[in-house]
Length: 347
Ligand code: ATP
Image 1 (cartoon, rainbow, N blue to C red):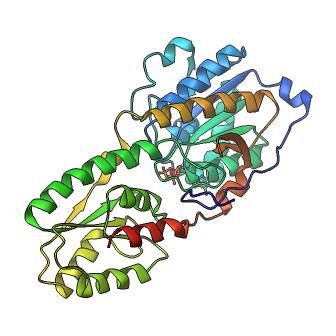
Image 2: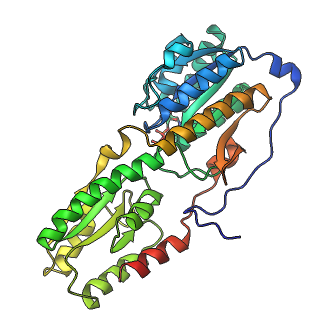
């Protein structure tokens, strides 16, 4: 069966279970958000805290990701700490990028803080960098960690969607629709850059949703030539054109690509728009709230059932458990069917 997700089929991987003796030791679960914020992180925090309370665990909130973990920025959380946050963007726990956590010394300090705070297990919410840190830490200190995919990039193996991706693509689409109005009125070609690091997953979906002329993403440098051909030999009567570009080094930034197009095709009125951080903010969509809620419940239940050092994801609408070392090693590729759709529909 062929599934038209933009990622290839994710692997559904085996469970890592701990002994019942180890399971009995978990009394207090720490929760943190790390890396770039994404809409729906609050819904995930809420689900983790409420589920932990439901199963009689204590919960420790950790502010500012791994940086706060190292500094011991801990506070107790209860069901009321997460009231009225499901609809809010950002993260009430704050987030950070921590250079110190990349060092053995930094991670040792983090472990000492967890011992001092009597925290027995961690739930980390973030992207692939957060998972790398979690995997290393869990292995070095034999510490139980469950990770939740909280990133707008959707670039993680082991889940069809990450928390924040749906909101980000909807925010981007709304902005591109507005750009389309001005492109149409002035008969312009707009190069629009969206986030998503080097993966291109935001670009491909928003490109289709916005009716883009072309989507320029990493690993598809031939797309650039196809776009040039289309601008040279294709229909000239189009009143507006949108070209999506994924941020990252390949095939270049929107500004660089815009420059090339302006030089090669001076007859086109070419403009560039970089959507930037608006894609990370805002109220999470219903899809992201539901995804975050389901994964948050599953994360606590996973710890309760003896899972450790795994990412909880959703594949074909089923909760799945992917060992962290597998989720960080594999590279997401874009389903070629998505590229074909762009090409056919942009006639
Ligand atoms: P996003 O992709 O949405 O921005 P992310 O989780 O990938 O989220 P990063 O800044 O890449 O964001 O990673 C978050 C933090 O994880 C880093 O600041 C660092 O503290 C930690 N981290 C990343 N890679 C490693 C690593 N190899 N070893 C230890 N810690 C790491």
